[in-house]
Length: 173
Image (cartoon, rainbow, N blue to C red; front, side, top):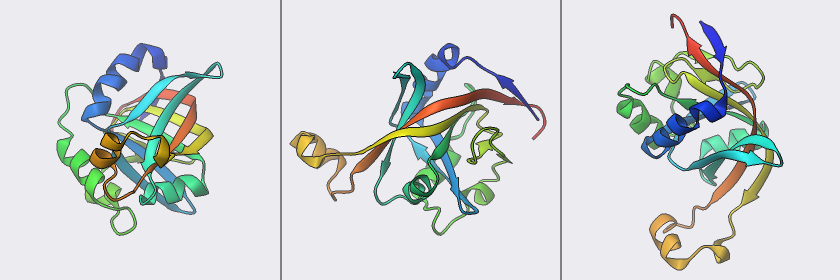
């Protein structure tokens, strides 16, 4: 398996097109790792740095890992792949009770500059180090959005990660 460095801005269209369909956010801390499906996020530039911002609910196991180790990877599938089963599973099961990598036969590739894993089946990889985090302020969210997105009050924390490495995984899995 090889890593081919990529320019994130050349892949931005593909990443952002896939995001509402689902991509994976992976994290690791204290010998444990998890991956979860996300459909919200932003790719851009903050403080003259390339960043990816993710939103993770307070109740998620991934949040526990991010709070212990402020690093994550963004894992994007190839354009012409059918990953609905994987995205469905990783978006509905908790890493507290299920090893999603094992259950979905995902090939873990160690991160190069972060401790969080890359995933061979989702070859576009962004390695990120958290440089800012912010809990959502429920009072600042419009009531309609609170009713639709937060009926149980399980709000998000926004994590802005500086993209410290970006590559395409190629080769045998």
